[in-house]
Image 1 (cartoon, chains in turn green, purple):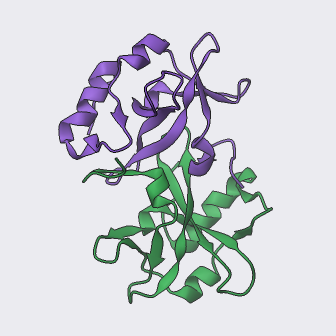
Image 2 (cartoon, rainbow over the protein chains, first blue to last red):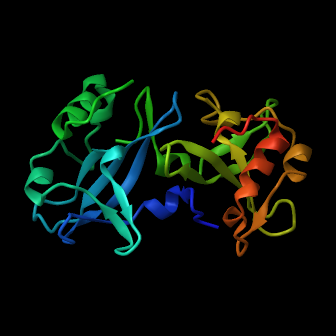
Length: 116
Length: 116
């Protein structure tokens, strides 16, 4: 019910682990930000549950950055933990998406073209 | 954190009510089926929690059929309860998405072009 070759369920993506290219765990997917107009998944928001020692923070990644690896059962990103730590992020009570420039900043940080 | 003018979080869509054009509640969104290749939301899967008296069933709708109505705080579909009852659906333990023809059947039922 949750997956086919082509489709995957949103509630299956949520909670899925994210690894770097060396197989180190970086965190997991918290939720997806969906573009209401195009119907596209714009961002996968990763959560860092506290292993950084600074409380849970949410790190949006352009969806294009994630590749699903069936062997690991999780997403792989070509990013280091340091790159993620320095990336745009927000705390539980912050609402950065209200600023239209926020998404552009995320794309710019990861070097992904911002096409809207 | 969950919504902007343009973006909406997947975990906010999940659980959102779905109404017909007359404002009658039809059910709620259970999850979204995302096309892994295109990154698009292909289907919003509605759940009928038992008011039909036949146990919970999942009714996938092409995403294009849903319009968010800020006044009602939910999605509106131009469908009657009878149309939904007669639509393709599956139970909790069924896995219809493994059949590549299933999605086409859903689109055909609702008269939405199946573009893959």
